[in-house]
Length: 154
Image (cartoon, rainbow, N blue to C red; front, side, top):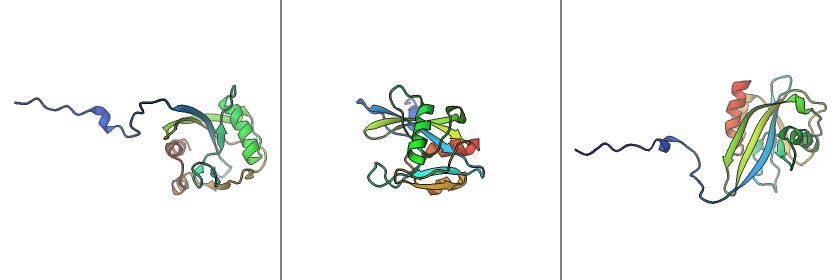
């Protein structure tokens, strides 16, 4: 009698197959701005940028020597013309996602306090959406699992 064939337990783990070469790691910070009505601000990536047309949480690359919180304070001013403080940013989740030519590592913060009204300074469209509406907006693959984590928090 033949021995039973054991199944590979890793076969049930979804995701990207392992990558055998080197891939640069890109550090990006993102923020879910939550308004007084509990809506979340999302921004549509403008034409000419990678993943144009997809919706994402505002944020951007973390510069050399910069903390994720400092990067978000800077990016929010540059992209949306709003001011906040590092102490107003609370980390809630992170994404680790393998794209074809880089690996994205992205902490997600929540911010409920800022000064000013968000304005699209970089050609992006902005939308205030309820958390249960975010599934209706196509997002980059790294952002998708963050929506569920944000929903659980709110």
